[in-house]
Length: 135
Image 1 (cartoon, rainbow, N blue to C red):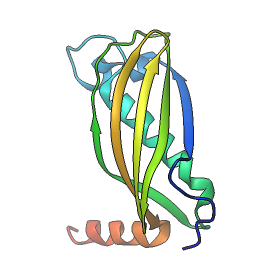
Image 2 (image 1 turned 90 degrees about the vertical axis):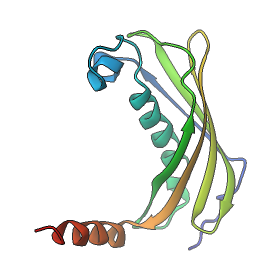
Image 3 (image 1 turned 120 degrees about the vertical axis):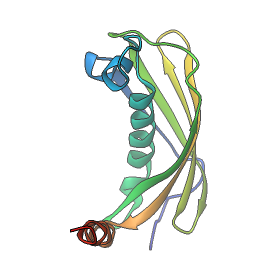
Image 4 (image 1 turned 180 degrees about the horizontal axis):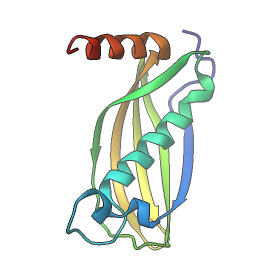
């Protein structure tokens, strides 16, 4: 695994607009029509994955294994949300990130996220074998 340039301190940002597809009531019936925590977690994961992907070898990707996130302020439909990720620690295949999420008015999240570098084909083969066990 040759990850030249992949080192703690590198950052990435990703900005999205809150749409009807990303609201809480789409994921959990009877909840407000604001940016969903589930969508926020997906944004955090995507921002972290995109941060390290250019440093990985062909056929490698990362998978999320842990997230610890607050969701401290609501964001209405139509407002933009930006995730700011920083690689904090790299230990072999284990990557630790800190992430802050803001809307256009205030901070909406602080998060810690852990991902592992995996060989995509090996990972997908292992996953398929697991499913084959129940057929």
